[in-house]
Image (cartoon, rainbow, N blue to C red):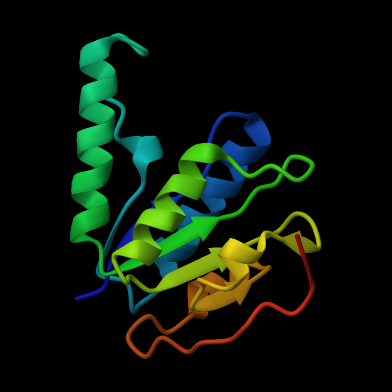
Length: 146
C-alpha cells in the first residue's frame, strides 16, 4: 500500500497554490492509495498557536510521518532558506529510511543534505501525477548544491 506524507510549506498564496497542485497530482496518480497533507489537518476547535493546537499538530504530523511508506516533499526556497518544518520532515523521513521524493519548481540550487538523501528528484508537478510509486524509480540531483 502506498501511503504518502506530503511535506510542504503553505504560508503564502504561492505556496498554497503549489501544494494544492501537488495534492491534485497525487489524486490523479493511480499508484497512490492514500496521502496525508498537513495543510488539510488543522483542527477547527483549537486556537492557532495555542499550546493544545501545537501539541495536536506536532503529534498528528509525527503519527502520519510514522505511518507513511513514502514522503513527498516540496522544496520551496526563499533565497537559500527552505521552510524549517519541511526540512524537519525531510530529515525525519531520511532518519526513518523512508523513500523521499523531492519536488522543486523554484530555483536551480539544492541543499546538499537534501540532494544526498533523496530517492527521486523532479522539478515538475505534472511528472508527479505519472510517477510509479509502486516501483520507486530513483535518480540523483544534477545541479548546484550548497
